[in-house]
Image (cartoon, rainbow, N blue to C red; front, side, top):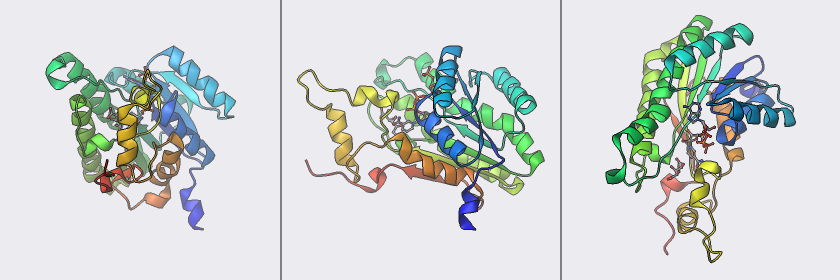
Length: 265
Ligand code: NAP
Ligand code: GCO
């Protein structure tokens, strides 16, 4: 039956940086589709916060502290997951940071930090899981890209460079390992209401909506910000057998932003 191809029963999924936000929503969707959930975050406080949230949802997730920019930590984590849980079938490279700084005011160190988390880390994590996926005969890698994989805007030079690179890393993993039955795709969320975008939505002192909030809603045919729930179905699709012939694709879940010139002011 076609719906069976969307099942994740028997699969082990590792979602990076999934103590809250988009990562937690994707992990929740995977659990509901039958997967065993493993996540990491950068410190114990966040991991504990995530474990409490998963427990409240009835999700027996396992959480680990790991800085995804550290190859030794990632390699050690994958070994530990394999020993304690099993071989990873699905990797979601979700962990990310953004620094909104005008480029000429951004230090090279700040630029490198964003590239390290948003681009180097997905490379490190994918490199760590691909060998066991090859051995097992299948694997799914989902990279969380962005509108900034396609578009630029003021103050996000490092983030756009990283997410643009992540789009091409996605295509290259597809190209290099597709014959090993590994599908590597991206999800490009539009503007989603999470802590990361809270500064762009906060009310002004006079109680009016943030100018960027008004701008994005006018740029989105759906005329709203996305929610983390909007990403759940697309993520299950890309993690399941339903997408076994979909590879190297960035699935934009953006309410139509990329198709739309924007509402006349
Ligand atoms: P987020 O604040 O970007 O959360 C990402 C998570 O990753 C946080 O828990 C963060 O910890 C963690 N993290 C950061 N650096 C890490 C590291 N070195 N090692 C391990 N974990 C690390 O929240 P989000 O909005 O849910 O974004 C999730 C992903 O979606 C990101 O890749 C983001 O770029 C992407 N995205 C977001 C939107 C949006 O509108 N929200 C749209 C498109 C794409 P900290 O809390 O300590 O930072
Ligand atoms: C920004 C936002 C965006 C979103 C997302 C859009 O400052 O423009 O943070 O970058 O996070 O990446 O897809």
